[in-house]
Image (cartoon, rainbow, N blue to C red):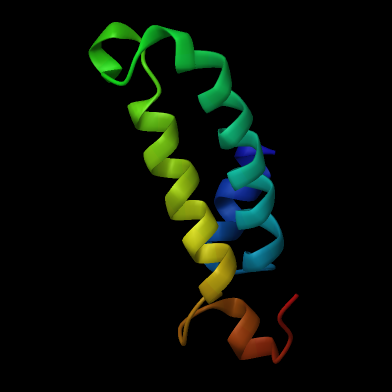
Length: 76
């Protein structure tokens, strides 16, 4: 998920699918680290929450004008 999904997000290939999958995964990881507090220096959930929200925003917005999805004319 992280390797293939990360490459797909960088290229903009099936962007909405991979971003939504990453957002769900990071949401679960955030819940696991919730008990440690917010600060990432104390192994908290700050970093995973930030990336999860970013992936959620990408899933809502899509790949953008320079994505492979736009070039091939399909977007999930």
